[in-house]
Length: 193
Image 1 (cartoon, rainbow, N blue to C red):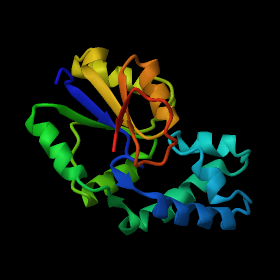
Image 2: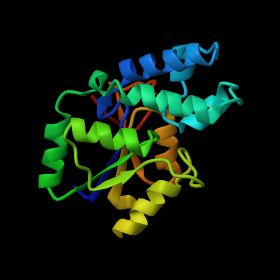
Image 3: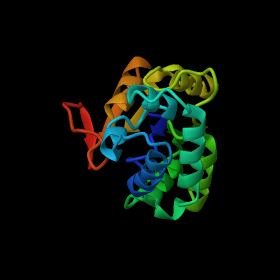
Image 4: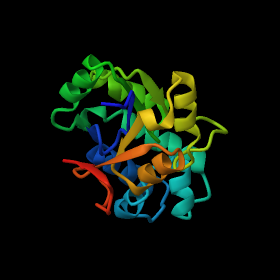
């Protein structure tokens, strides 16, 4: 009840985008002969796409690979579904006067397209930006807090990956782990099913 700002990660928290990501990754994997399985790719989701490529040891054609991935993913938005009760939960939070926001590592174009399809209108939306550090750097959360004039103890970040926890921790914001998401269940203080 003390929280004024509820921030959510997108993939694995509000939406099930795994089938969409698998299709897009398998397409670029074959097209660019990357020889990196979807399983290898998937273990790094939650951080910006260029950082995933770096972690996979893919250094050549990064922009072309990202553009191709985004294009393929965007063409198959129909594969993305919300998890049960997402819209009802967000609506309930808004009715209680909470600011509902989304902080994701997904690019802005696809994020807006997805949010339009699933009819979610967040009060705050943050996606990767050029020359702005991504998760787990706290910059984006701290910017949201500053712009909203909300203190860190009045905010919470809801995520499903360890990188989400680290982002919240680095911003001194409470974290809620989503057990149904894509990450492994560690010893988090707060969890939801």
